[in-house]
View 1 (cartoon, rainbow over the protein chains, first blue to last red):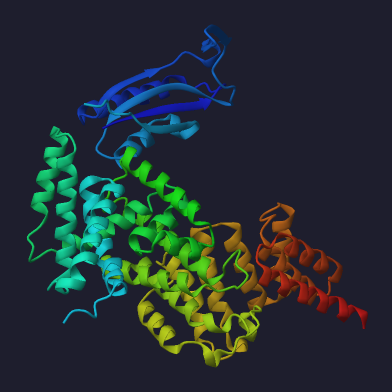
View 2 (spheres, rainbow over the protein chains, first blue to last red):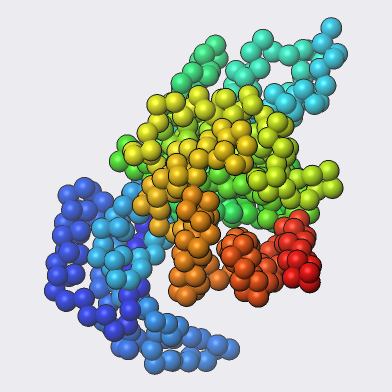
Length: 111
Length: 416
């Protein structure tokens, strides 16, 4: 079962190269454990564009969908047997120390 | 003749054995709804058959087998997929009908408790799940015990079952490395259940015996499931010491009686003895929070009179507790012990400092305790203000009346 770990970090956080290196290390560890599915970092929230279709009309907003102090900055997807395993991976991510990591089960496609 | 077997007896059997079957099936399915449905099916069959054919030789085995078969039937009715094939195999392997309940079944119950008290669930949810699936209470019983409407309990359970299934919260006993922390969540849930019964925060009467009884049954179960865990024995002893004093906490008209004024001859000595036996050999120095709280309760339970209370020893325990859990509530309780061990002024120094940094601004017991100490050292105007704040904040009618009496008492004292 797949779990997506979404990082929300303070908009002005400047994590530096150590955080990046830590993420790579977690990815390598997860890969060796057979738990790695995918991971990406995102450009900063000010580069976001939000799209909504309302009454057939396309509306674009400059910025993320909600203005919050903590913004989505990237994700990992892990393959795990249970929530506990996913929480263990999430706890290794550096973002859990200076931001928040939301763990969400990925919905399985119906057979 | 088996005609004496009535619905009530069947209910009683299902309360315990049904919970076990739900626990075992939930572990296999990782799905409480399926497990409950299967056991409900077995219950319907029991209601139909047992009064006519008599109680089976081994009702526990019958319930497990019948529920398992109901689960298999339900699975077969659905589309067959690979995942289901594996589940069916697990279910087939589940039972030798003659030895259905061995250590595995106990492990299943323990796994159920750990799932119900998982830290990914909020505390209200954990309490509802634990009462439903570990204690075996019905939704109606939980609603009346917690004094919330039935639909609220149902919603909490539905939401919880959904999260357990979707996020796959495992029905498993945590690994050794995680056990202390996870066990703490379990103990806290049971403690909250007891506390809600012992010092009901909203009820008009202060003590709710049914919840106290359930908490006691749960601690006994945990001791059986996790022998040799000091904190489990600690919680068990703590609950016993408090429970021993239950009858003396309120008078005939339902008014609160402070520990100081309680009639100690009414304390249930057999519970105190039992609690004491659980603490034999326990040391304050390596103790966890529940063991320390139990040791404090033991000092109170062992003092023949209020005046004979060994406050220095109690203070030592609070020092240990504050080192593990430096929370403002512990600091407040420690200050109370400090007052009795070394005088009101030393306690007020602590409480004034807490006020200065705005600790516990909405906690009624803080203002209640502060009012008492202020009054004793003659700071009456401040005492009155503290009583008012406590009265304003408390949710409990019994507590409010008590505080109002203390306030009126102080006012009349000043009138002289």
